[in-house]
Image (cartoon, rainbow, N blue to C red; front, side, top):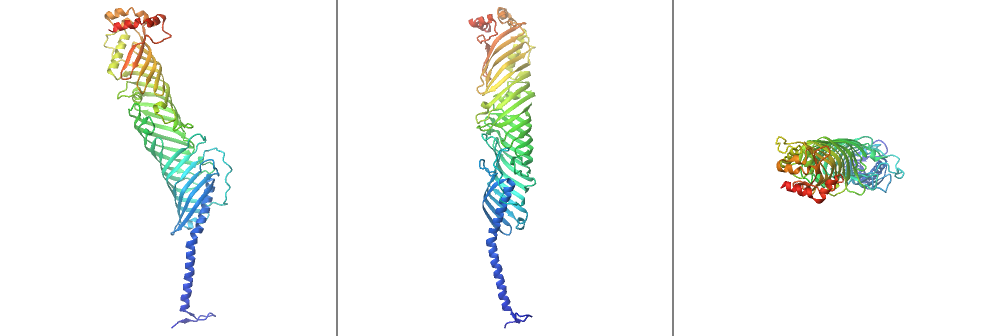
Length: 549
């Protein structure tokens, strides 16, 4: 039995059957609209996202933008995936693209993507590469914007793994500066305000991991190098063995602020085992520094570096800069040390467990380390002057010989109270290609002074020095008994103006086994005529040989 209802009007009676059929029609229509929405909404939304993404990137980065693919999924958030994104800064094709992104995944609420301001929950970037162009270059005219309006955007979180940040130098002959960013997380990103970030990246040379956090932006579209950045960093386990000729592990921390192409940096470093490969003697080394870093080429200008090597302090300034066509960087420094110990420097550069001597040293030097990949000792160039006060030799045998020399020089060869004498040492030095050349070298102790010129090879430890031994006493006063009597005949030949003696000497052999002797055959333009004759016929050499026997 069919129930009917007769409403007022002209429709006539409506039965329950009619209502059921009407409901089915409405459900069918809704289902059709639902299917259409499911099929066509992502297509429409993908076009909308691609159009707005292109507009935002083009306007905010001042670049020509290409987005190859965009796919959208509604579940119920909007998940959009954009692939193969390329940004060419001001349309330039003569330099690498400002940015390339293999894949960008966007997560946002549907309603948050509508309107003049977009709010995005998260952006995940894969295969991100950023190439910061050099400042001050002359690009083509700015790309004409194809969109009248680019909506503002705020992103709660941006995540990128294994990205590359490269700064391009203004000089095309110089190599770019690369930073491999293993992990980058940015919070509250906006093009109008700074965003906080946390990054972990690898430094190429010396190899080590840098962890940094701070504030980045806002992005400077006209000059990307003017984009502001500030933060702090921790540099852990930097392996100095990746620098040929060095070894040791460094830790560093500090702060920086400025722009991408001009960073003011302050920090400190510490190493417990810094060493030169040639000597192999690890030394504690720490520094405190103030520097300026040019991010466009990686050049570093050291305003002030205060270093502590063992018990010695060294103050330096200079620069670490790239060289066209060369791997690595050239280091140019001016160094001054007024509170230092000679044993620290000797332990660093000379082989052996014990340094040759101890004493206070004053040092002034210019340091140049050439760019390149050959051994550090071959790239290291030093020029300067030094003075050592109160030097004492660590070898008992060597110190004993100096004590004996002091006694003889004072004309008291048997005075055992003259012992453990201190020496003063000064001179000029040049180190090039592993050979140390010393000039105007003066070594003085009570009663005697040694004046030398010569060289020392740091690799084979070969000594080659020539000069004079100046004594306060006459030759005959340096010994006693029969030898003293016989040496009186030699006094006139080695007489020194003002009194005492001047004896030509030479030092050869190696550092561990030096040899000392008379240098009567060495050319000396200042040698008196009677000494020259004595040298030619070898009479003095034979004479002293007999005395030694």
